Length: 145
Image (cartoon, rainbow, N blue to C red; front, side):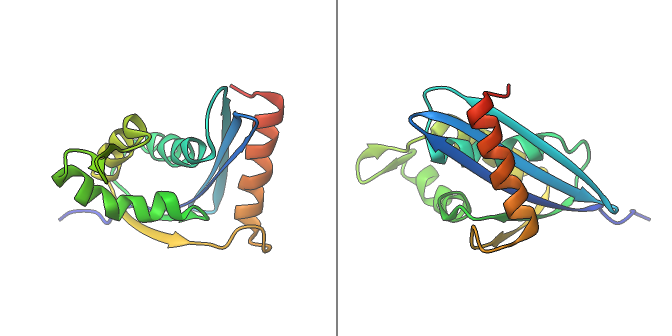
């Protein structure tokens, strides 16, 4: 008999100002919370949003049911768009897909889990979204590696 998959909740956010970026993730499992954050130079907000999800999923060592919360429609909608991008050889409107390196990493990680995506409106008091926002800004400002 197969054991049920662990259920983990992940919140993510990215921050970028003057091409200096920060990302953050909050992972919640079994009543415990883990906060992750980091930064990058010469980047964009979309890259930081993608990185936050990639870094969170890369911490999972076993197949899980993941409830992924993000305020980034770029990330959440892009997961659906990626099916079309693959068929069109990673192009849209004749142009290469931006951030292809990160999309490939993310799609590979998504295959390992059962992921339910949830959009959360940013900056309206959702506790974990606010924690992610604060951590991403902190990482950006302080260049946390």
